Image 1 (cartoon, one colour):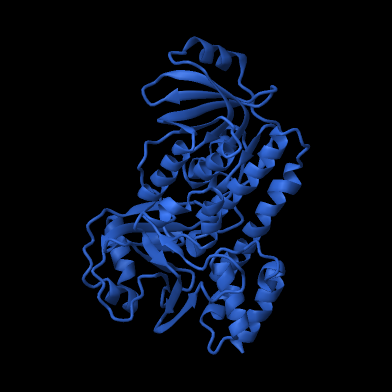
Image 2 (cartoon, rainbow, N blue to C red; image 1 turned 30 degrees about the vertical axis):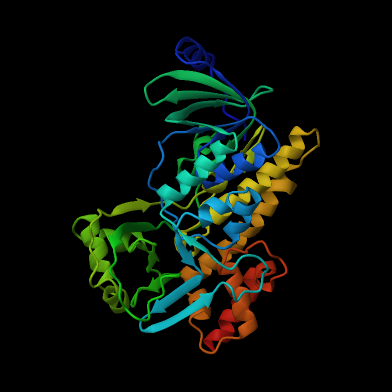
Length: 428
C-alpha cells in the first residue's frame, strides 16, 4: 500500500498558513497516552530528541482502567514504575468471574510465567497524565492541542502537517514517526491503512459510580467480570478504584443495547439489574455520572509499519476490552518499537516485520484466541470449570495476567489447539 503524499496544493497551504515555527525532531510521536509516553521514555534513555504531538489536553478521560501485571515490566523498563507505585492507585492481584450464581477467581501471583503478579486499577485520566509528565521529566517535549492533519512519507524525512487548537498550522519533520494515537488512529486514516476487524461489532455502555459496596465477600483487589445470566455473549465489568468509586459497564451486540429505551445511564442500570449478584453489589451505589457509549471499537490495519513510521498499541489494532489487554499491547508495542528504532538509527539494518510486527502480533493473536473463545463460550467453560487442574490454572492465570508472549506456556505456544482440547475436557 503506497503512503499518502501531500499534494502540491496541500503543501502550498501548509507553507502559506504558518504562524508558528516549523518543528524538527529526531523522533515524532503522535499521542501522549501510555504507548507514546513509554516509547518516549525509552528513546530518551538513548539521548534522542523526542517530540510528542497530542491532540487533546491532559488530564482527559479514557477507558482501559484495569491494568495487567505484564504492564509493570514495561514500566520498569521505561523507569516509570516508581511514580505509578507511589500514586495511591487501587492494588490489583487478579480477576474474579461470576455467572448465574457461580463464582471463581484467578490469583495472578499464582501463575506459570515469571514476572510481576500484581498491578493497579487506575483512573486513566490521572494515570496517563502521570506517565506523560514522567516522559517530559525525562526530556521529551509534549505539545498538547496539536492535531495531525496531513502526512507525507515520500521523502527521506517524514513530514506532518499540524494544526493547533487555536487554528495555527505548521510542519513537523523527523527521522521517524511513531503513531501512538490510540482510537484516533491518525496514520491509519491518513495513509488509508484501516481494514475491518474480524470480530463481530459490539457496543459498550459504561460509567463511574460511587459504589458503596460493603459485601463481605467482595474483593476490591480484583476486577469482576460478570456474564449475563441469560446471554453468554453479554458481559459486565466492575473495576474498583482506591477512592470508593468504580468503573462499571456492559459489552453486548448493538442490537441488544439499542433495543432498550431511555438515556444511556438508564439503559445501563436496567441491564445491570438483570444480574442478581451485580445488582446486589451495587444496591447502594450513587449513579452520579452520565454513561458513555462506544461501538465498533475493534479494528485492524493493513500493515503495522512503513517507510519511516510504525503504529503502536490501539493505533494499530484493538481487540476487545474483555481481558483488559489494550494497555499491555500498547506498552509491548512501545518496547519493541523503541528497540528496533534505536538499532536502526544506530546504523543497523532492521527488518521491521521480523523485529516488530511478528513479535507484537504473536501476543495479540494469543489474546485474540481467548477473546474469540470467550464469546463463543468455550473459554467460559474453562473459567467456570469445577475442580480445575492446578498446573493448567496457573497457565491460564498467566495469560489473564498479560503474559501472552511467554511461549514456554503451552496455552500460549499452541493456544487454539490446546484451548479447544481443554474446553472439551471441561465440558466433560
